[in-house]
Amino acid sequence: GAERILLKFDVSGQVPAGAVINNAYIELYETSATPSGDASMGNIARHLNSDWQSAAVTWNSHEPNWGGVDEQGSIAAADGWRQMPVTGLVQEWLNGTQPNYGAILIGDETVQERERIFYALNAANDLYPRIVVDYGVSTDTTPPYATVDQLSTYVDDDFNVTWSGSDSGGSGIAYYDVQYQIPGDGWQDWQLHTTATSANFAGGQNGVTYQFRARAVDNAGNVQEYGDVQAQTTVDSQAPSVTVNSLPQYSFSPAFTISWSGTDNGGSGIAYYDVQYKIVGGSWQDWLKKTSATSAQFTGAHDGLTYRFRARGVDYVGNAQSLGDHQAETTVELNGPVSDVLPFAEDLIHTDSF
Image 1 (cartoon, one colour):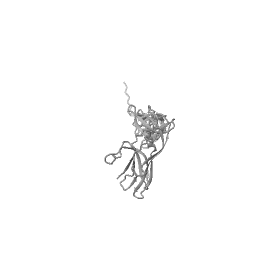
Image 2 (tube, helix red, strand yellow):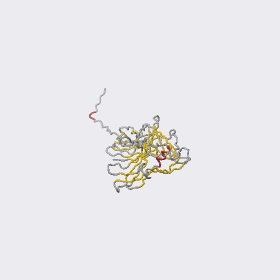
Image 3 (tube, helix red, strand yellow):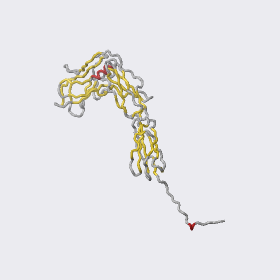
Image 4 (cartoon, helix red, strand yellow):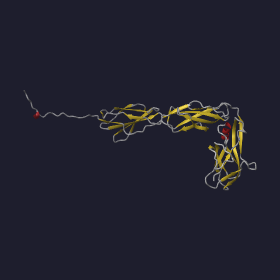
């Protein structure tokens, strides 16, 4: 069966408040491994989100709630000390931004005969588990500052958000927290305890405005207060709707005017139009590409042919309308109708006089 190791260390009782953690790692002494000569076993360390007591922890009676993965590595099948880096986690414990309920170490839990055995706290030797912390005392009492960078007025439903920060106190930024809200709905956590300075916001709803704000926490534990909205944008994920205006059934010139119009349904606005034409029986041909005009003169039409037209719009976000069937057509008639006047036959002429 699976085996897991729970550990807890009194960090705040040994490290002064406000200290900057330069390096920290958990040490365990491996005393045996199964099978002999086994390949290295992958393992992860997760922080715990609820308290526990060593006498009460069993598979059936109690299992603390754990958080995300803090570190991961591998354990060889050989006796000796094994180290698991936990620098960031120890800093959070010390700062109080993450409650110190300890950590859980989880190995390879595939059903097989593999295990690593370590000395426990009550080992009658000096090989018990320990945490080694290298720290410095900081005089930084100034909170850092972070802000979300400005966003375009309109974006697609999947867009990138960036933020940046500085720490004039000198200890350096440990991590950022980023929140978002739809106006009137209240702030929601989005990116927490992240060292990244950008992330993709996916699944935005068309026509909805999203607002963002960020804060920073430095290595001395100073926390920036959340402020007002720092950046906002509105999602435009719908393409414009454009059509070619109707044409007369017949055109009596090789040159005639084509016009088109459309709307972007309250979005970012139409950036340009693409207009195509074809002769009935032929294929579509590009006529005007990326034009901001809404009318143009079509020239060079041939007598007796029917010309069809279609248009599409592309908005400032890049949403492009699909090109569908023709939207207007006209048949060119250059010669017009022909009629003949025939002479009267003489024998049909009759004169009456009164």
